[in-house]
Length: 381
Picture 1 (tube, rainbow, N blue to C red):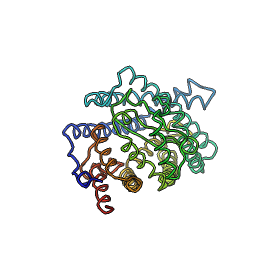
Picture 2: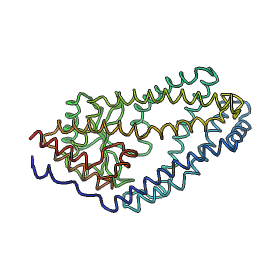
Picture 3: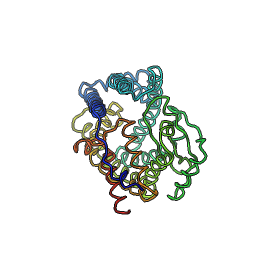
Picture 4: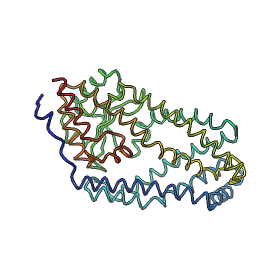
């Protein structure tokens, strides 16, 4: 291992990178603000009740169909309100030369996203209000168990059902690289069901890789933008990090953390819903689906408040996965070079401010990850 390479300082962020990430953060904040404002307006003005009445008129004999119509109208309004930030985000990627996607393709993806969102939101809403009608006192507890099961199921199905809706995948043709990655996975104690080339370049110039799915759907996906510009050693380093999550059981731990948060979230939603019905008289009964914006509001606010803590937990997991990567490779140099190349290619901030990293980042700063690799190399040289 080259000591010089292992101790070289991390290049500073470019003005372009800082500008891009600053605008992205403000877009995220404005998108959240618009979403919260929409939910509050729907509740305060009574427009949510108007949408409910329209849904009942469209399906006077069917509560289930009325719920679907309400969800459809709510989703369309939400999409219309958020279209401007979404479009600006699309233009931002082009402005900073990070996107290959044409407007027509983006609009098609937006439509597909709307359809997928409608299907998932309808399933959630139908289950939710069916459980409320079945048991007004214990619906939240039953819903917690049901939704936890759906969360795990979705994690299994996403690589084979959801991802292909938006991207093309094909088995990796590089047999030598495929063999190396499968061997690396086996050393980590996991069996993958295949290694796939992810045609990300059709839409983006960014690079990425992931270990996706659970059980029979677990697979390695490598963006073609990664395969075209990174050495096999660098790609192996990227995957070794992902396998570190498996070795440290981060997926299982994250599911348990999510289970605890979801349990509290459903309990809180039940308390807020009962208060709104019994004390504030905002709704006539608990199963009035005009209260859906209130449930979404509770979930959104809770997620926002917990974001710094969840990001801190995620950064802890990422550091553990990095250490596993260091231990699994003959040299940390491919990890260091891949981190710097990914940061440059994706315009990621290597040295964000402390508060930005604390609040927004689910991964440690690139500079800190590189420093950790260099320190590990020194202590083990």
